[in-house]
Length: 188
Image 1 (spheres, rainbow, N blue to C red):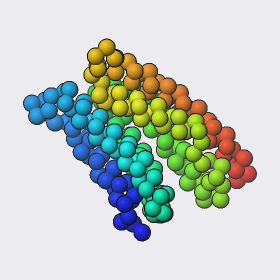
Image 2 (image 1 turned 135 degrees about the horizontal axis):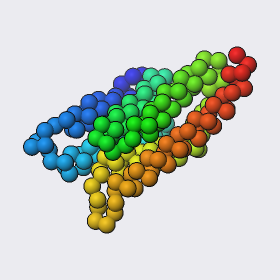
Image 3 (image 1 turned 90 degrees about the vertical axis):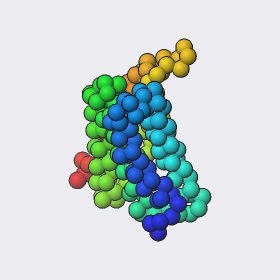
């Protein structure tokens, strides 16, 4: 069933991407930088919440579907990639860090697809290191989108530290998944 609540939330998340990106290209007389940062942060946070919520609802309402299993990670990767590209353009994230994160997402998605095709998808299921990487990455993006200090809290600095931690965890998690897939890759 395509039009269930979880899948609708996933489609909403995909539809939010152009809205999110467009915010950064509005003239400064329409939205001042502080409000742009706050609005973009709230849109991204809402997308992250819908990511959690669609998975939760799919499980408790027993509304899991093949299309949902396909679309959910695609929506996540598109939203993160859009955020990172915007953050690179506005010089809040280095291009190398964005390339590491986006490249890993593409590579691991391709690896999972291939492993599923050879009947070995369980060996590259989401691992704890992947979850920690995602948490650091999402927090970093939120801080880097907001960017403005909150009282004595240096949001920019915290975001930069977290995105670098996320990049390191990205490489470590990629190595973990490649190591897990290596026996199947070697056998083929």
